[in-house]
Image (cartoon, rainbow, N blue to C red; front, side, top):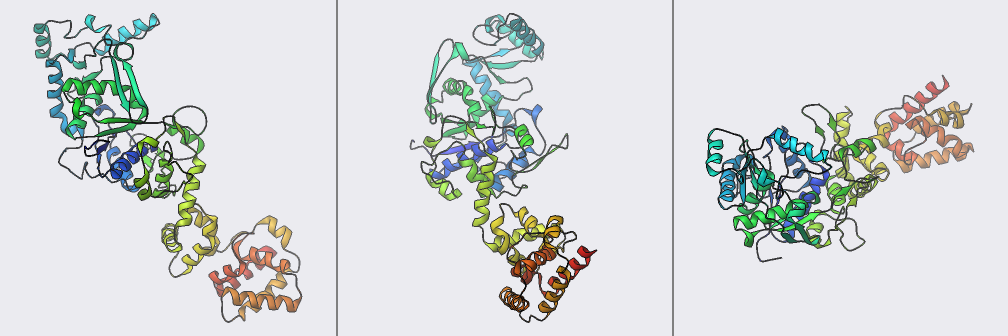
Length: 510
């Protein structure tokens, strides 16, 4: 670390929903900024207008808000380095591209897409790979070959052109990556002349990214491993502009890998194995297809963030549960691993269960009331809190509260056939009818009082408890499930308890 103020940016492209890998990149940027008292900035990199997807930017912002990763500068927030959409900064990039041409670091290229396709196919026919760069550029349709007059004429006549970076020949570009250590690329062996400015008047990622990072005083570029091959070009761009003294430090994060097999985690993996890969549900504006989101699947944002933090970062201890505050205090890029980190959907559920159980009964009851409201079920009074108290330990998600407790709100319409066959005897109806009379006489309808009255009655009758307990539970909940039987009776209330027993006698006997 230097004395320079830490300023980091999360710079997604609005070309679709934000992948969980993108959220992790935002998280690591956020944590690094907070750890060092710096600024976390959101910048929308929308230079590729052909791939722009409506609502994608809103989705990105909503996702960050849900995760609690709130930028201090960005679209809709403002800041002294705005605007924060590259499309709104369009006018400035041409000047920087021209500056590179004047200094000899870039050149005009007039080759058409068709012409380049022919060159590429010819190379493939010879089992070679075409690269627009050091070996080929002097023979192509560009300002390195054409005279100044020819170049001026083409531009004045409106010929389409791009501006390409002029890669220096046979130079080793070395940079220290905070995560990966010293990394070296040879310009002749591995780098081509990338397009910096397109014929539509928009810069490419490479030019806009470097210019904006410089103008926004970005101190550290923390991004995914897939951008590592771009680093030498960006280093050379800083040199070409004379910005080497203020260029940021780089850190390239490892990939998030598929749960099974090789390669990077993709939407296809989620579709195949039934788990989300996006923070929020996404509806494709063209196809109408809906992709699952962690929020809509019932995950808590703190569980999602905790899970993501441990995909590629190691705290150095056995501890696995960290709040965002904890992470801010202990996070460091030096503890981010180089190799890919395998995603485990079951571990994601495990994290959610932990945070679910950490929540108070009152918090969960409020969340459960929203589920009940959607189902048109009355959730007023103390009943919902009592229900949650009894079933909380059995659940990982708020949605499971309904699965584990629906019988508290809806009387059974069917009864488990296996339990009926095994537990419902010929004399069960008559015995349950006597239980109903006994229950009707219980004055204080509390679980302890109900249990005491039931035990006294059973002992007087000399009936086996198992003979009655199982049919009684079946009558109340429709199967062999649920918490303590007398707690169920208390929560249902005397009238509902008696009504359900009578209903079971009638339905099962018929």
